[in-house]
Length: 112
Image 1 (spheres, rainbow, N blue to C red):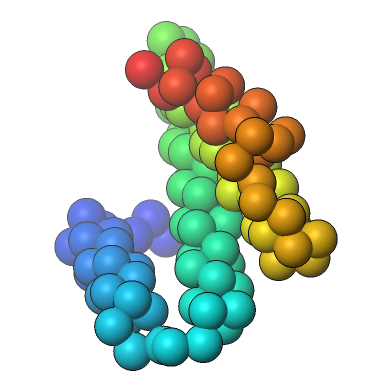
Image 2: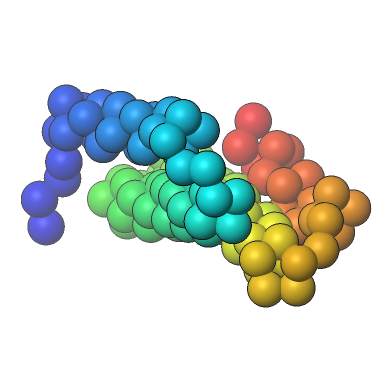
């Protein structure tokens, strides 16, 4: 499997940021903006988790453990983003105090 270069990862990151900026500037429909925003957040967290798991598979020893902790942290972040989106888009609820916080709060001790 081909590992993307840092330059490729930087280009993808810049593209995601530009899409976010376009959302805030160009889309006036709030529900469409929420859908796109939540989709970008979920997909970027999930992609990060997958790439971190891939990095863990390519290393061993302490490095493997470190990559695994980071990957698991991103799984929790993905869970938080996904549950936030479901509550916000499907159930039309304010997800501030919700199950999404479990994913967000478990992310920090694992990622730091």
